[in-house]
Image (cartoon, rainbow, N blue to C red; front, side):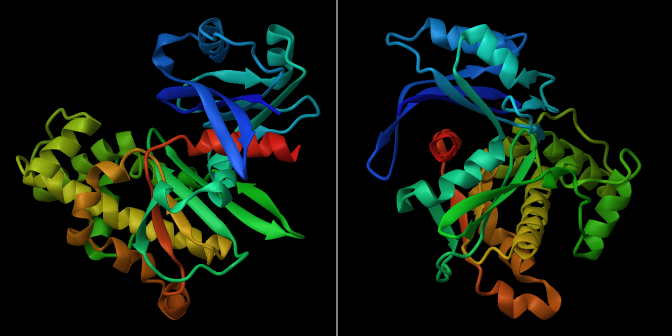
Amino acid sequence: MTSIVADIGGTNARFAIASPAGDGYRLEALKVVDCQRFADFDAALHHWLDGLDQPAPWRACIAAAGPVERTAAGGRVYMTNLGWSICAEALRAEFQFEQVELINDFAALAQSLPLLSVGDYAVLRDVPRVEGAAMAVLGPGTGLGVAGLAAENGRWHVMAGEGGHANLGVGSERELQLLQFMMRERCPVFNEWVLSGSGLVNLYRAVCALHGRPAEDYTPPDVGRHGLDGSDPLCRETLIDFLNFLGSAAGDTALYLGARGGVFIGGGILPRIAELLPESAFEQRFLAKGKVENWMETVPLYALKAGYQALLGAAAHLGDC
């Protein structure tokens, strides 16, 4: 059965019509819009629906970046990084939908994992996946999303959380010093304060403070560009530190969820700076978990390629309803 699917992040909104195709779903009428162009989600959805050249399906699943409050009417969510409120009951009334489901965007991404093919991700740690074991996904972008997927009685079940707001862990003397600088602005320092687009700038400022140098007025793309081309050595240090923190957070996620089915890293930042992985301690930090390091050696690690996996996960969620 066809359905409307949407993936609403802090920067972009993605809309499509999903139709069953084999063991997965086919996406049609796909459109990506800038969230800043619209006052609220309803306006963005109206914009996409007005451009359709086919009848709109009568049911929808909206994956949104924020904690979803479950209700009998399908849920509500306040998007912490955008300021939008979305309510399933209001959407049904406004758009005459018969069914609306709201889920967390990383819950949707987690639900897509069993549907992915080898072309959807790059292998970072090539070890065998344990069949039926839990999987995890995390991703730095506008914020930091974290979710898991576990199998029970032949079905997959999503574990959605807000790991981006858990406290940041450090694994070296240098990182302890960086944390101390960041604590002057934010205490406690949570994962998303570093592992996100704006987090790159927060981390860059701390790196500058560590070197006793005033920080430039850089945006996240500036930090990435100057770090990759080598025009600002402190930006390059920032990117390496970012990867090290990300490796540690990915390892923590694997431990929390027992993710021997694989840890998948999504979001828009890692693909842009992946060329620096060999210079970083990313994998070492992923594995460095003391007495359970041997267990960590059994956990495969992947980087999701750019795509529309969360839309597939939203379609799968409706298929399970």
